[in-house]
Length: 178
Image (tube, rainbow, N blue to C red):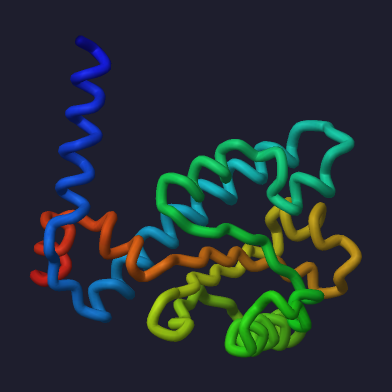
């Protein structure tokens, strides 16, 4: 009987996610901004907590390996979460636009200009939420110690269709009112 209830709950969630919704580009950006802030806040807290524990695995933690809470966030929101630094300005796996944004973060860090999160649209299928980590964070000093700027930036890549699939009608109604 219990299996049937959980199966029914899953079926209801699947039906809700498949409902036809009209979602504007601005609404998608607003949702990505909201979810990006939440994801970064949780990921940062989890990584800082893991780095505070004496361990020989700092390198793998900084690569976000062996961090089940971050894996859980990736699954929950259907996103990719990465931690980037100055070296990633030439990372071939990043788009040219992302490399330019990262380069701007490096410039701001070198010139002590305040940093703010941003969202970039990558074609019609993806959006990337970038959020710089404050320099006083242990992440900057433990994961990017060899870097003169100690720059660390969260990168959260969203698939547009997954954002639309996961958003519910109540959230959309609130966004329309704002």
